[in-house]
Length: 125
Image 1 (cartoon, rainbow, N blue to C red):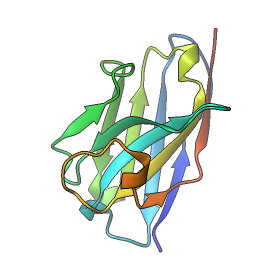
Image 2: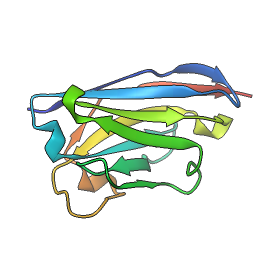
Image 3: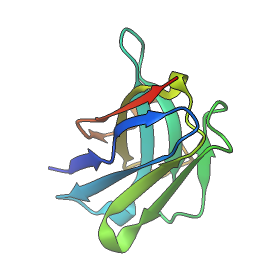
């Protein structure tokens, strides 16, 4: 069973930065595309960013492009989300997820096979 554990969330002022980490165990991390999603209270879980298994391809939701950077270090079984210029609307629980398919870069929640428990990110005005 693949387990994903997020860390790095917290409280930050608007304009600040956070770096989220997600470490995998129990599987072959370097075989998975890895995504970040977020969910605010009362809203659907939404795609944030994805990185291919090799780290050579990435994609982002429009509202975070240019502010967030997804990266991975396969030797450490870890994917990162560097978040800069944070806005209050970025406030959500952030989840990492693993996609075993490795055919294109998926944006849909249903395309991912394994999920972490999430880490809270709160951006104050």
